[in-house]
Structures are given as C-alpha cells and as structure tokens.
Length: 87
Image (cartoon, rainbow, N blue to C red; front, side, top):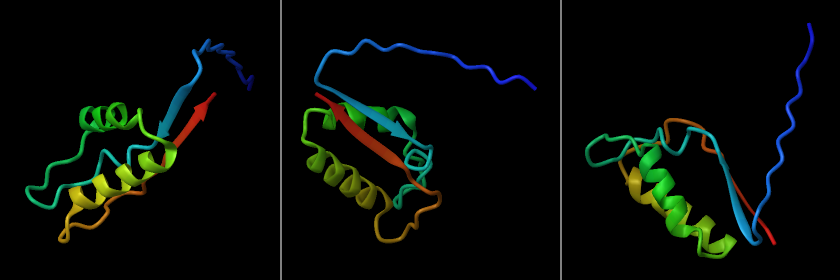
C-alpha cells in the first residue's frame, strides 16, 4: 500500500484567524424546539466573532452554546473548536 502525500501552500494576509472544528457544535439541539445549530449558523457565528480577541471569542462560543442548549438540553456530541491567529 502506497501512501500519497499532498502538499498545499496557503498564502495568507496577516493577521489571519484560523478555525478548525468538529461537527459537535453544529449537531447540538436547541432546548426550545429541538432544532440543530447547523453549519450555516455556526459559520455566521465564527464570522461575527472574528473581530474579537481570542479570549472574547472563547467566551462568545461558550455563551452561545449555553444559550442554545438552555437548561433542559444536554450536550449530544463531543465538541472541538480550535482557534488560532497568525500575526
């Protein structure tokens, strides 16, 4: 079995934020009506917080998730969101 390697070069304009995430956040169900968070809303959230500092972004992600789940829902999937900035 041969392994293939693909090299990808990214040319970025500094500063740039990078977001790596699993499907965990988007698969969470809302307390009120059971809707999933979904990718469109998650990408909108990331775009809206991208102007904030790293700590503020973490706080907004945590608060958004808490508000979405409410007091009646439980987390249904593991959640991974990695955010870093290249200056």
